[in-house]
Amino acid sequence: MASQCPKCHEPLDEEGICCAGIEFQWRCASCYKRTRGFAVPFGRCELCGGTLERLSGKNAETDARILALQEAFQIEVSSHLFYRRLAAAVDDPQVSDFFESLAEQEREHALELERKYHIHLGRDPLRDSGGRLPYPFFDDLCFFANSGEVSRLFDCAIALEKRTQQFFVEKAAQFAAGALQDLYRELAAEEEGHVTLLETEKERGSGNFG
Image (cartoon, rainbow, N blue to C red; front, side, top):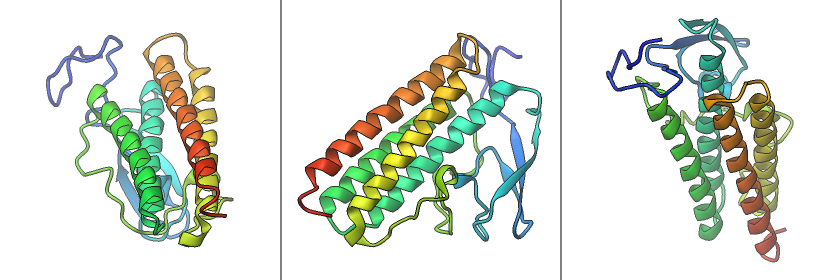
C-alpha cells in the first residue's frame, strides 16, 4: 500500500491503512433504496428505517483491515447520534447536558478515526437525518422519547455501551498484535468507561427519576 494518502498526500501510519476513496454500497431490505458511502448512521435506510444489506465495497472487499475500520467508524458515528437523540428526549437540562457530553466524546472518536486513517468523507457523517433509525445492535430495546422515562433512557444507553464494548473486545481478538488490535482494545476501554459513567449518573439521579 502507498506510503502516503492518495487524496491528501499526507504520510500514512506505520501499517499504511488508508480509507481514501473507499466506498461501500448498501441496499435496503424493505424499500430497496441503494445507499453509497463509507458509513451509514445506525446502519439503517434513511428513507424507511429498514435494514441495509451491504452489496459491495469498492477496493475493500479483500482487505479485512478496511472492513474493520468501517465497522468501528460506523459504530462511533451511530453512538454520537444516539446520545444526541437522548439529550433531545429529556427536559432535565442536567441530564441532557450529560448525554450531550457523551455524544461529544463519541464524535471525537469518530473524527480521530477519520483523521488517522484518511477516510475523507464527502458529506458530514455526523448529520442526523431525523428518520426512524434504531440502533442496529439492540433492536429489541425501545427508544424512550418520553422525558418521564429517564431511568429507562439510561438503561438503553448502558445496554448500548455494554454490547458495543463486547463487540470491540471480540473484534480485537480477531487481529494479531498491531495497530488494529490496539485500536479495538482502546475503543473497548472507552466504552467500559462510558458504562461506569452512565451507571454512576443513573444512581446519582435515582431520587429524581424512577
